[in-house]
Image (cartoon, rainbow, N blue to C red; front, side):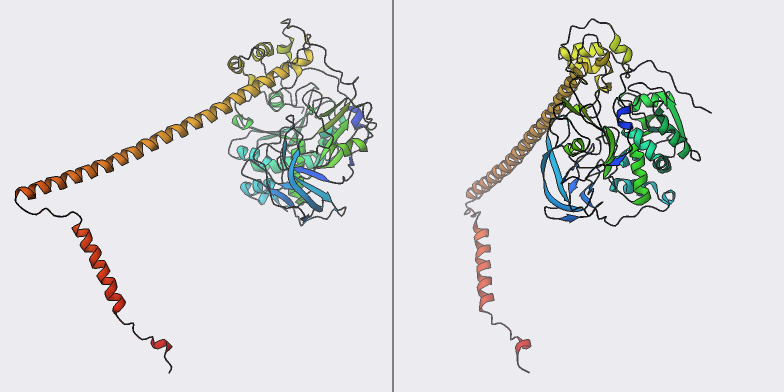
Length: 530
């Protein structure tokens, strides 16, 4: 029986441009001369390095350990020698640097000892979560949230649905499509591992109807499994976590909440397959499927890429046309970000490298005044008022923008796509979010400074009170001594010297020391000859 999906009115239909990269089978990317592995390829605390320059490591060996609950380790994608542990530019919209381990492969690809779990159903959930964390598994379809931490929130809740996200709705990207076609069984098996952890009543795998080959393979793999393959209409951005949950279950994640709050855990299919690989063979997350596409490469395709591989290596392998390359984007054309350095490495969240020509992604035309047509609101998947958010962001009325649920915006770009005035709406929203976060950070710093100032004031006041108490005690003692002196004089007695007792005690101590020094020592019988 075909499971129904819930209706929705938002979304857009941009050109898909997916067939270019699915015409060729999946293949391994070439081994580069060096791998650059950032220690923070996930949301949360960066991993802590365990190696030093000159260390020889084996494939799968931990290079950096998890630093807390919201963190995951980093492993060696192949065997080789650590060249350095230093700051390098990382693939991020900020263009900032971060600590990285640079590895020189030796070409031997020698594995460290590794072994999977024979029966995961016999393993306690907490132990299994630690195992998944130790194998470096983080979200491969979004921001890279540590998988064990995400599943941990589900183990503490009553979970009705486990939702697997195989939608991959953004144009050009076909990494998950290829994964589901090539490794359908791993996706299903990984779903069973996760189901053991969160105990859902139903397992739903959502996939768009523009992936017929992957759908067929998944249905074969799930034939004797509780995993239900649910095909949904192709529409962008139905692959957003909250949007897919709404489509498959009819439920809405509350503002500021997480899916577990409404009895749902949502996982990307790539992450699910990585969980199974770790459990089945003990292999940590050291590679991922990445789409290399765009009209500036001769052979668009999907590659199994070792983490840390420079993007330049992938472009050259796919026949990049340097003269035609206009924009290099990590991710898709709507939610990705432009790269300015081809030496940046592939990380756990790198699902696509788009090498576009000028004709393919031309510069946007000049923005025109808003005509208040309302088309942006019609396509918004978060049911926001993009026009109002634009006005407030532009006027820097950030409190009003926040009051209109600015942070519910997933920055999908659907509003900007349909805007007849070519207003870069998402850029305004990102600016406003950044300013609000900056103001909040400054508020927190100011509050901490105020607390430190108040604490110092209290400490100084307390110390002054203690000093005053000591001064008062001395004054009272002096007054008593003076009173006693006057009383003694009135009786005709010689006043006592207040220091006489101290002098007498000192004299007695000196006399005792002299007597002790004059006493002869007893013979040491142990040192006498027998």
